[in-house]
Length: 274
Image (cartoon, rainbow, N blue to C red):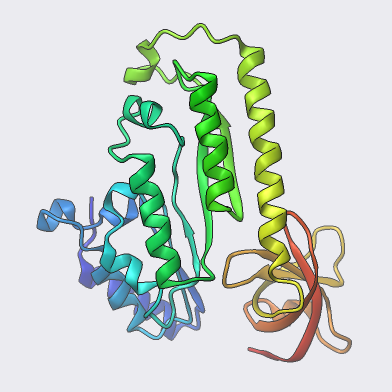
């Protein structure tokens, strides 16, 4: 069910007045917002309304490609608060498997959305969900998924091996693919994902990124940790004379001097912005 736009705006404004710096709009298919109220998606209105509250950082999850409109895509290039990061689940790179999943879009349509997003925001960071071993998946279907990872260049991918869920149409689909074959495909996908994530993070080397501090590293209380606008985890040593607890919720500029597969690391530059 879609909440009334006025309720969402009121709640967001209350958070901003309380000092909140970042809001994430959540929904099962968040950009399908409004279909039950207005007969068509109107998620772009939610983005505009929350941005107008003055929130510093705005994100949303999770999007369904079938309802990602051109208007929403355009906001990545025009809204002050909308962070340059989007999670857009593909699930598979094979049109045959997408149809079997009833995903209601094709590989071509999905890649068209990616192209539009990069035109609107060339530096956008993309993440996705992918399933290996959906009933009936062939080696060719899997290779289509593997090639999608390499073509898009995701910064992060959540990978899953299909598991039967009773009551779903897929649970009734026959599949004689050996488990070891599915596992071997999954391992190949994970390797490609790791290569792509590492490569995507190399572009951050030498850059100064604003990091919203979430706390300190679980392994080192003298190491700050937080999120970049692209939702990357960033670590940096706590500057001398500063209290870690007092920096939670602050924004610090970090010059990136190390880019690993799943995180960035660097040094704080300038004064924190409480």
